[in-house]
Image (cartoon, rainbow, N blue to C red; front, side, top):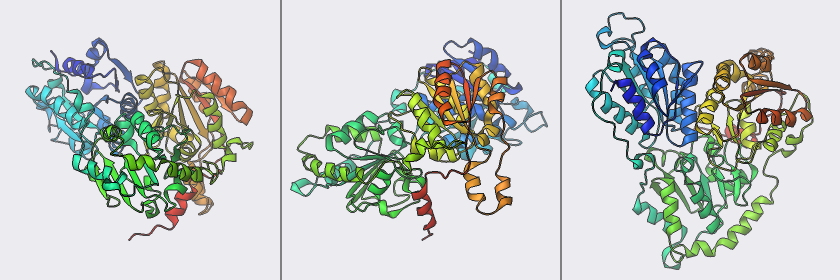
Length: 575
């Protein structure tokens, strides 16, 4: 079988349904096979960076992996930002790039970016888990398996394969054997550390069990598909749960035990609860305790008795603070083991449930979950982003999904949007590339076509990746794009205008007619300028069943809901 057909067939056998690409000469051998491979849909993006983001979105939504295809040289360089976003958020993506024939390497061939010249492998190497050149047909099957295995190994992330065109046209005789299912869902854990964690939650010999226990749930919960286990464990022992922004939705935000988001754009109950000094034991599940996940490394969140830090990646345990229990393992396996512990083993934790409920009642009585909750009904024109999100949330079905871009709107979404299920809130939170959400939504919708999907993006983001709205229209992907059109790079403007008019001017954007651009690209579109127009416009967009853009005219002067984070940043000093 020809290498290109073999690769595509192998990926379909691994569960892939969509391949995202930008055609070019160095991948010509793939094109006909893309149209002939049963079970695989080819989606042509506007830009290789968009194709990578689409593959990333597909991976996050499907819970499997995504794949994209591009030429070497300029195609590979265009993928770099998307690869970094996938890498820092541990999203498994396979990037396949075409390369000049092996006998052209280093001889001045057009678009030669082989290891003998520009070296695509070296350019992508820091951004991926493995970058390989398949320069021998006898290694083609082996290198594909090696790349997929590296992609799925903890911590997951993108990988890159470079295929010269002569190898693409070669023949592979070895049949593809699908990867073992355990590679996709590892069940690893440290049994010794697990016993130490259980001893802290319920000391042996009748010792006093901690009364004020809290959980901080990170993205590892979503990646392990163990949101149900988290909910059952929290309910059994009445343990309040906060999430990181990246993990928003892994615990229903309207549940009585939910504290909301902790950290950047976090909620009152989560922030005041975890910083109160009352927490005796804090269980961190699948968060690397980054700057934004810890409210700028605020040591007040450290518990009085024990920090139990669970993560599949041992490198992030202890990176920020030492833990009394460093539990390297899969979050799902850890929760299943905790649920399987008999009532006698965790009896002390069960007996302290009434005191935890009383503590939680006190946290909830401290005030509304959202700071400045009244912003959600703000009547101002131009519009307040919180009012926009409140209207969109009322219109969206409960299990509808939101894709959030980078900018001031990320903070508004994190704070004012409620998410109720895993894989319904998507954002590239760690590196934060502007425009990521616009193409990523195409991949998310391809993976989950039955889920109503909206994107909240900005006018600055549209300048970055706005052309890929046409991809949604071209392939009939029903994505509702909500553009917060405020005439500025919002977050930057909020800082710059305090420095002076010159700095502010550099961050301002002329108001553009994004609805007009969307219509030219084949989308339905509307402009919204007043509060009463919001819900009818969103209802029409969702009911259209097509790609649709709502150009919402907002005011750039509204401050983002990150006051606790900003205060923590203001007092930060390097030790």
